Length: 151
Length: 151
DNA sequence: CTTAAAGTGATAATAATTATCAATATCGAA
DNA sequence: TTCGATATTGATAATTATTATCACTTTAAG
Image (cartoon, rainbow over all chains, first blue to last red; front, side):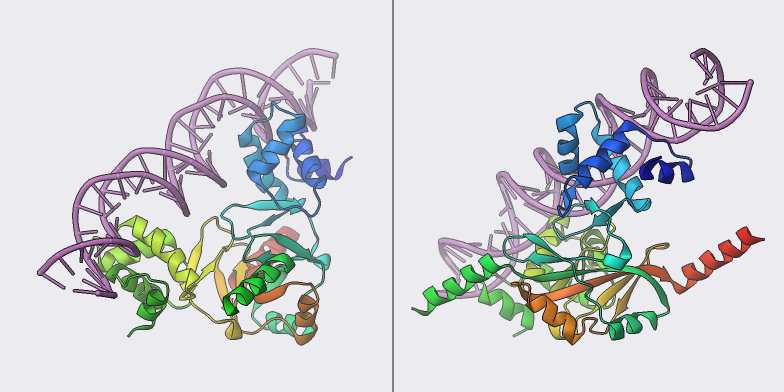
């Protein structure tokens, strides 16, 4: 029995081909941060009969079952990616100039920092770091512009 | 000359009472994470003639001038808070049960972790950590529920 | 005080998401 | 295998957050 079916059965939910397809499509795009409508378009390519409402119902459901990660970058829509367990957290580098998003695979919180968090009367289950800056190409453009101004 | 007026003049923008009021209202609510419509309601209390469009125009403008911080928690709307400079970053503890948001004032990235970031060919200007878990009261409720099940 | 240009309020238009509902599909039990 | 309770779906209306438009007003430089 597939992992998806197990999770669904535990909650009295049913396995439908629509849910399987959504899982497959997101799984095929590891490292991407897909919005709901992007996922809708990808799913339609192979299964044009699927409805947008089903996408919007399925994604939060898969997220609650920890089969997908929900991420809110700063562009005004919810995005999803393949699930990453706590032990191998990953984070996002957001370019403030072009909006590109890169992944950082390292665990970014040191031992001391994690202790600080534990002291906060809050049981931490996970964390996500958003790093803001300029990617290589945008950083170059910025320094070129400065040169021009300096001439 | 007020700080707001200075920032505006630098960019050829004008000082209006509407912009002043928005700054004041957000400033009066330090530690809060206000959505655009919440800010609209607060502003209307003292200045009922202000339009919603002005709020939506003013907030991103104040953010770009680094007079406000924009934050995207995971509830589907943009929120703003008083500006906090990089040197005293603060982060957010989000309760996965009740949705409460608490602030963490410490710098959460250790020296070693910051070095990792620098090695990423990305010039980092700032970062924000979202911590997910359960606040004290929700954590208690969860452990009570477990006891009941165990009986 | 004039005046060009920035800014505003009202509101129409979009975009993302949620709710509704009749029709369909799933899955445990007979 | 069939049956039936009910979970699920697709289509679409409704909502919510945000952006665009435009005629009128305000700001601030001269």
